[in-house]
Amino acid sequence: MTPLADPSADFRDRRVLITGGLGFIGSTLARRLVEAGARVRIVDSLIPEYGGNRFNIAGLEGRVEVNISDVRDAHSMRAHVRDQEFLFNLAGQTSHMDSMQDPFTDLDINCRAQLSILEACRQCNPTIKIVFASTRQLYGRPDYLPVDEKHLVRPVDVNGVNKAAGEWFHILYNNVYGLRACALRLTNTIGPRMRVKDARQTFVGIWVKRLVEGQPFEVWGGAQLRDFTYVDDAVDAFLLAASSEAANGGIFNLGGDRVVSLRDLAGILGSHGSREDAFVVREFPADRKVIDIGDYYSDFGAIRSALGWMPRVSLEEGLRRTVAYYREHLAHYL
Ligand SMILES: NC(=O)c1ccc[n+]([C@@H]2O[C@H](COP(=O)([O-])OP(=O)(O)OC[C@H]3O[C@@H](n4cnc5c(N)ncnc54)[C@H](O)[C@@H]3O)[C@@H](O)[C@H]2O)c1
Image (cartoon, rainbow, N blue to C red):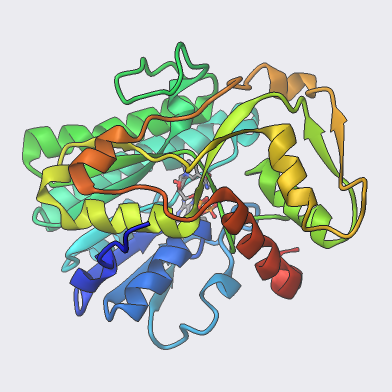
């Protein structure tokens, strides 16, 4: 592939706030920005069940400011957004199952807190540029494939409803108040630093953990089609969206280099393991099936045309790097 100019190059000495910056994608973004010479502040609540982990920023000590606070605290968010040039807004409750069992926590974090972050920006820093981490979950079960941004938003779980509201608050504030904001609808994102402890956030996490531990992992169903974005590619998209005035008010799908069934994905991952029977295929558990979206893969033509983004790391290479990372660092993620 043709080399892409490094989109982090524009961020030297820029003041950047990352909510959810101790999580999987936020910390990878923080690393890129610190390396590029940006002045990065992380706000993260480190709620134990979520994906935040101090080890995610190991090696950056003294080069990044970390503030353990909660985006639901409107008072502290006003102080945090003041004087920042960019806000990468990634803090979120990300478990679909948790959003069904505890819908009000999901509502508070993914919906209400998003509105108060935007109010803080409107009142204290109206020139800030915001990129919001949205999700393909808000499309629900696709009517057609690949899914483009014109597809109906019809979530199948509470998390999808609240993320949709959070996303649209950003677009609304862009359109009504001129607060420059855009949203990226991420698909399954994989890579080093994702939560692997259990299947709470992503099934790929628990698959990787089991593989590295030499245990078989479970594939539920197996025929479902998915696309996957490697985390460095997702970070490129955040940086490109932040740098571009053309992105303001936009909603963009991210996607992967190919479409794969979960069974084939398991086969690729299993090839990195030490045992023949790397995985077993099981029936989909009933409580998950009702919120399952079936097949999904996205059309990312809009962000390719507008910002020149495309996935650059193949699924095989992304899985290889992920497994290599957890072979070395699994103990920090248990
Ligand atoms: N990883 C994916 O496949 C994926 C797919 C679609 C959308 N997204 C979105 O991308 C964003 C980042 O996801 P991730 O995979 O890095 O998840 P993650 O759980 O690793 O990171 C989220 C971070 O937000 C923090 N956080 C949660 N609630 C908070 C609160 N109330 N106040 C402050 N911090 C809080 C967590 O501690 C965690 O560090 C999320 O908003 C998620 O909805 C991710």
